[in-house]
Image (tube, rainbow over all chains, first blue to last red; front, side):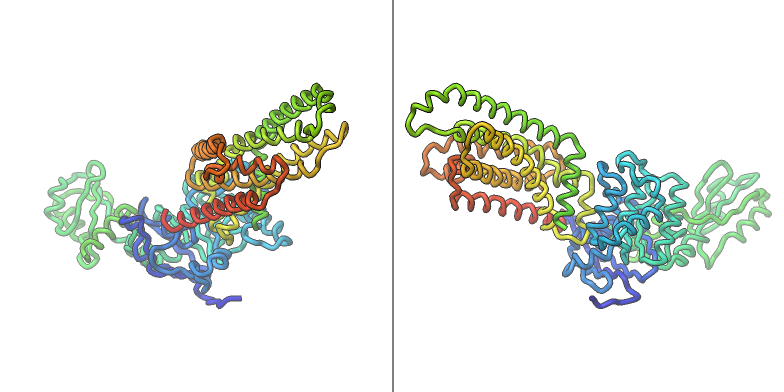
Length: 316
Length: 247
């Protein structure tokens, strides 16, 4: 039927989207291999949803091109869209329909062969744990289950690329764990893009990650790269006879000290070449501060964002 | 694909009480008028028998009902078309249709087809009432057909306008009010168009419909309706497309 590039299921290059003079997304590129899970990470308003809308053909890019399994989305949208499953931020469910009716409708819209529709519905329900809800009206389901219906909708036609916009928002912790493992399973046979603003989520399920900030990619690496970036950036220390913040700052150079609680500090902005940990322990012994705790803390998502965006500012 | 969307739309319509209420309103209102006309006809029947070239049963009972049906459609179609697109946008379900491998044309045509099916349901009720007179007399089938055909075209034109307005807003109620205002505008144009040669007469939907009520299926009238329908369906498709490009 079409030229099939086995390894690359989705490639988007230099996507830019402007709303008037306001640039929502600028120069975002994505390459997705079969069986790969990419996480789009970013604070609210970073352009994650806009990027996803462009990839799914809901929004035309101002500049840039998108191809799905070698089919250009702009030239041949119908053929390309058949290979994509999309869960928008708000699950696109009709509340007046029953789960079965809705999934049947979606299967038909996605041109699943009539003979396979029943099987496709059963598969999608089983994967998302909806089998017992088959006859329920979607409007009467809880938010978590509506979210699952949204995911079932995105995978019912076995698309090559599954695009999930904040799939775990509004779910309780158990459901989040279930959905995450579902996404991991999906990643075995499909390519998945998911957006989130929760950093541990990306670390738990994604193979690689792109961090967006104000419409620009500020970080693009394998998941290992993100782990390295996060770790060793800061440590948390507590003392029995605590020195003052000023004292710590003056004795340890090149370190930002921020108080957490009384006599507990976070030391951040650590430099790997010039690790102050050793010096800190030495100081503590010499000055009789009574170091009681020293924990290598991972940078929080805010710190990563701050770090990345300030780094970006320095470069430009 | 068009049919899949149309069926979904019909299902949604009948899942809410609105479709049922509209059907009941249309039927109740028209049946009332119809029975009144039949009643009047029974009273003046004797006089009519003595008049030369007197209007027949069909002209006196069924045609006035179609005249009223025009007004009923004017009021009820905005209620039916209001949510077709605006609600999809409001509930963010539009993304489902847009992401599916179907074109904007198919989406709009599916919605329009659902409206046509609903109109056919209303028309079949009206036709049923008309044909019930067969039990007690003979009626002019040609005239009834012309009226039904005209009413279908009128309903389709109203529906296409309603769907277009529904594309413009995310509030169903706003869409309904705007659509009703436009229909009222057309109605006022019809009232103002007393001079048959004025341009008002030319653009008046109700004047166009009067030809059908007299039993004439005239090509210019049919063309007028077909053009209105095509135009507004085209506008709707363009509107949805432009949202993808610029919204």
